[in-house]
Image 1 (tube, one colour):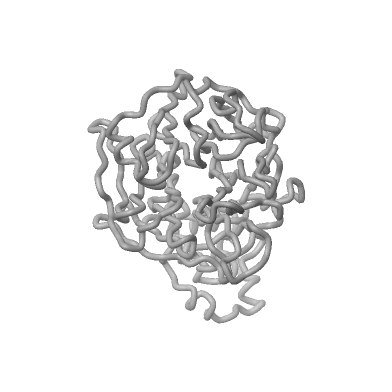
Image 2: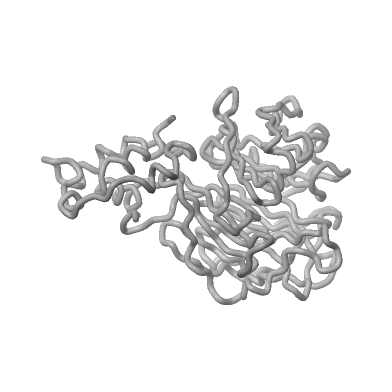
Length: 391
């Protein structure tokens, strides 16, 4: 496994140590806790030395190294961040936010988001159509988790402005107001900016259905949303879907799964919409994501075929898809994130997150279960939570 701490492209190491082993480790003494990082060296020099060690070793050696691993000043390893809802037999708010630490092998809740807008009013299933799920749309961008769109119990857009979580500071903030709050839209991220495309407001409106806007979280809420070129028509407001970044373009379709669909591609530099290549459209048969943050050939696009359980990678030059892995575990895939050399797929009605090591051949596959009483709505790959100490 590559170095998770010192490299420019950290990897997501989800299977390095079992949860049982982590919880069974002995307690360190107070004397050990006060020891220097490396005897004979000042801590600031020792930190540079041990930064080249893999994160699982830093966690295991001693408490002082473990505390350093989670400190804000130390290069972070990657973790899973999930939007969760209660399972069928559990109560609670419709949506909660948790992070899975792959080194400690445990889940931890994120700090509570701002009270407004009230997330307890979110609706996840249509009251009249049992099979109709109402998505909470979110993206990971520039080290932030951004929640962009959802539906209230009144069947109107729930978020007039995005909710933004920053793992390094463990703080939530509110983004700038949207020009048009929406749901059933395409949401994605590219070049550090968040994009919202098409969708439905309080009622269907052609201008909203054709609109697209972006926002740079690094600029803060004061920067505001910027309108970009509108879509040629309103066909992309049919369903909540992902907009996937690759090679300076943002790609999206208007229907999930294997149903007949239309696709479109936004050229970010030229600020124009283009037809999706026919091979890309034909193979877009389930949830999609890209490895844009990994600088993997400009952001390779992956799709999971929800029926066959095949994870496929797209080749721009050949306009074709190549199967990377195939598993029964991936059937029924609902959402996916890619980062740190792993594809993380929400499957089984949210009762499992299947992780595929796409950097290995053949690909290795394993499962991360959500916290007890929860099911996953969406998962993202982001730098781990910072903490003054590891408990």
